[in-house]
Image (cartoon, rainbow, N blue to C red; front, side, top):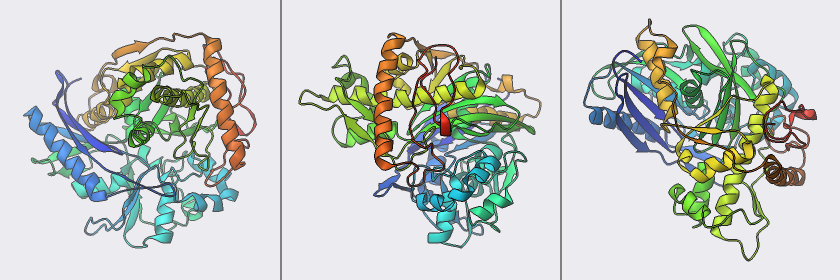
Length: 519
């Protein structure tokens, strides 16, 4: 890397992390500030927009104070699908922020069933409450018609600089972006009842958009990117065939597909990875809604004292004791798209301990990532060269070893859990220096640990089959489609079987469900 230090800010679901990144010395300052989303009955998840902005300022100022040096630019990563209405004249929020996990727009999605194929072709996204457009439409229908309604990044950028913009990758998370033209789609806007809305200007991710004084001295804001794509940039700059999975509030597996739009058949999302200096890179995207949030759920029940206890408690037993945990506490995302499915714990007995529950959660998370990886393999025609992992839960050796065991591939853990900040820092650097190349802007990939599989393929497939059977049972109880299914597969479950290991999947089952693990 070259140039001066940059401030990279990652505004996330449960907090904001800021790093001062020096091209020679690496991370020289860091700051964090919490965000406390409200989890309400009926699948509602809200946050106070002012808390989001205040956390950005607090974390950024703390990082700069620790670094004790000037920076040349700022980059901002955002949550992607979190939305709010706000007054463009004053910058004041008019609603709470509806967080990406929020499911209140499920009924609105059901109303669009006749248009779901058209919308998916236009935008690359299924019709599902996870994405921004349904939540934006819900706000317009039920909350307010005033001001503008946008993803949270547009509001944050406006508060920081006065600009009214969003980057191409974040725009691609709305369900309103034409995947071919990278412009707002009039047809999609009309279907969602958002025709005539004033929407932010779509810019390259490395575009200088204005100057902010929120962190003290005036600083140019030169990098914008949605969080998971920022993490992908940091982890695949040296290997376009690698896949990355971020283990945070949810788990998010992304893999690059190249410069052309990729419309999927596997239940994954095909979307914009980034647009840098006018050149677009596309990617595949799969989600697990509840990961750290499932750990928090176990913590609230008293099973754990926190994520730091996963390995200690899970290490008290050798296996799950026959317990299967499907942690669909906010529904099943890709490749099932079954927002109506809820989590389950089965196989409980009088001998079930806390350790069994923790191990079952790790298996439930890892099994979903296996099926996402299988979908990537089916879409690209070859398995990833590696699964690169980042996020706070990569600190759990138990979860990472379980992932390697079920995937039957090595899992490479990032040296820093803050890959999102590293990625958006690289984008900010590119926006500040038009002569800088991508390979010089992104820190060299170097894993802190590599987890190799320790079990046989047969054992991995047996454990995966048990999980898949429970998913199929849950989906069958709620029936096909369900509320806000967004075009879910008919049976709503991964089935059949490609065994874990190397090679090529046997194909995609009818309706878009993904078979088995990576062969």
